[in-house]
Length: 594
Image (cartoon, rainbow, N blue to C red; front, top):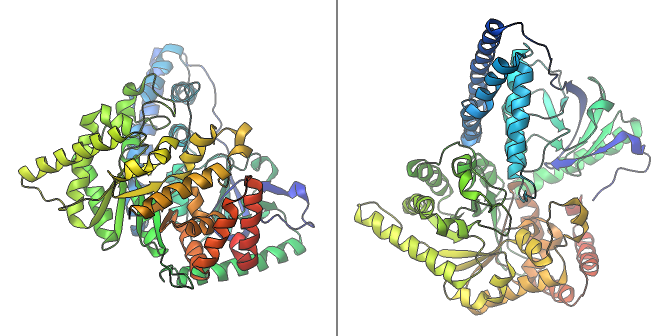
């Protein structure tokens, strides 16, 4: 991590979550927080007028959302799915019907009624003890909050979406939060960056900002009260730093850093399509992780050699009803055909725990924990949902190179049962006269300790392994990686984790089974060098990390990475492993860690 230089006053630096690999300078343009007025109505007649005012605001919000969707660049394509979800939320009776009931029952204004209803809905979403592993619950809460703020803004005549906002050149928008609609509407010719007090790396708004390649820092708590429109700012989206009112020395330092980073980024992106072949001519396949179809153009333009992990939950989480087979097929077909001749690895639904679609929420009662009914367990229990997805996957397989993998495998029986379901669906499709690939490779996610222990037995049933390091670390070290009290215990280079990964890779090599890594370790140069040295032949990661990791592989000898891995595997603490590996990277590639 690169810290601000010592001459920068600590009280002028705010820290958040950086999105992107750029440093920009500009002036703050602060978007005010939504203020909810409170007043009482005289009688039922006035209440009905207030309900009609709410209805008109909903209509206007619908028009604003449709406009925002149309503003998306063509290459962001399926980002329109997000807006489809927002438009569906507008029809949610619990939310807006509940607000109308409060207006009539309590004789209060629409803004207050809407705020009360939204708070109730968010309380229902956040159940006590629920684990929010990948930010899906937070994302749903954010969606409700953003939409309600949009409607309240329109009720007040402020046009909360600011779709036609006139911003000065080199503006850095600063807000408590920004909805995907607002991000989509950002004029890229005048706005150079975004800052929000709320948000996470996996929020809809963050994902869209990354797809649009807008430098951003989210989760910068308290920054708004220290800024006003026109304040000079520096935004470092690599480190997640915001420098307020920088002096000339600070500006000089960050302009130099910005230029060097931009030059480095141009260089590695320009060379990103060169295969990742080491100096001693060993090939490593570098692929992209896909969550939203809108990310596909960026993934491929950044040099991905295929999709190593296509998370398929989003289609279920962005709609109040279950997606139909045809909808799923169209999405999968688009990805597979657009990526051809490269391979797309589709992970079947990893629903459960923190990922709760509205349409099937009731099926999760009592099963909302990370150790409960999730992933392959859920699919094998709810065959109707599983079969619909398998039909769409198999139909899409006819259009390119597709592999399917099952998540959270812990027993041999789960693999056999899932493969049987896949074969039955394929026979069913062929009997209907539909086309599928003659053979679809089947793999498993190795992300729980039992799968490591059973790797050889599971390998007899699988065509490939994909190690999900995020969950493997969580389940092996018995910690919730979203709990700040145990953050320091989340150690990717823990000796037990490294040895488990090496065990799976060695089993794969002995059985001629390819092994990929698709967790966070694959995208970090420090751990990626270790993984390649241990024998991983495919790494899959967020698109913006692809050029960096490919460059690291191309400028390294596999023999040296093997020596590094052998050395680190002999350590007995994550601290020693990190020190050795970081020193190795710093000595050879100091620019990769900035």
